[in-house]
Image 1 (cartoon, rainbow, N blue to C red):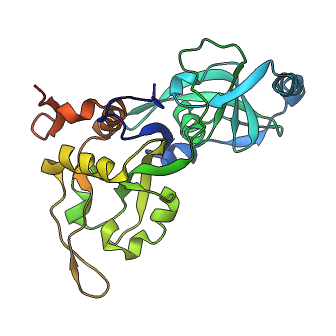
Image 2: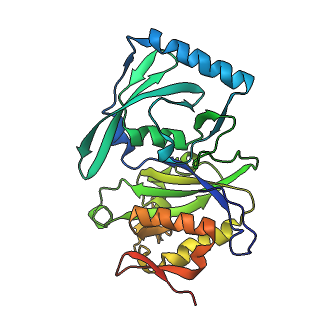
Length: 282
């Protein structure tokens, strides 16, 4: 589980939790429909009951950190609104991805047939799970008391330039003290972002004892062999070599973030031939 606290020097780098995961989110979300819940009257008492239990302390809110926290008959809070997962529906296949439909009831009387992964993506960004005040769930996250100090981000270029768009698993991986949305605001005018808009594929919130320079250096070291070697001409005609772009599968990026969090990363490096993490420790 993320948000761990460590004592060794190597693992004092950061405490991190997933903040938002948006891979193909636009593709998934546009297929979901939010409509008036015609049988909302049978759900309204459930929301009232949960609100009362939150008020009297029988229930509490804890950060959403894992998709396995999504359950049928579970209550969640997203952007200040409570929602209820009434049931899990059928599985459908979108390209190479298998997705499961949900019936989600919102406290304002609407419902949605969004995908399970899409709901998780929303909840990763500051969402909450309603749990019992005494709860032994393996996925209950500790409450965060530290200030958010930055984000590790993963971006995908929307460039139509074939020299960029044809590169497999190309992602920009870096660290920012501001929000990721703020960081990429003028991406299409910045050679750092290949003079093109970018999509936020994933980001991870960094809190507690951390060193941004160490985070960036570790990412550069691990993925150094698959760093993009490309020059971009900016709007002033100046040649720029953008950094922090790597050709690496997304699941490996997430694995590396977890290994940074645990401190294991010092003994590993990414092997571009096997496309897997390689142990280099003693």
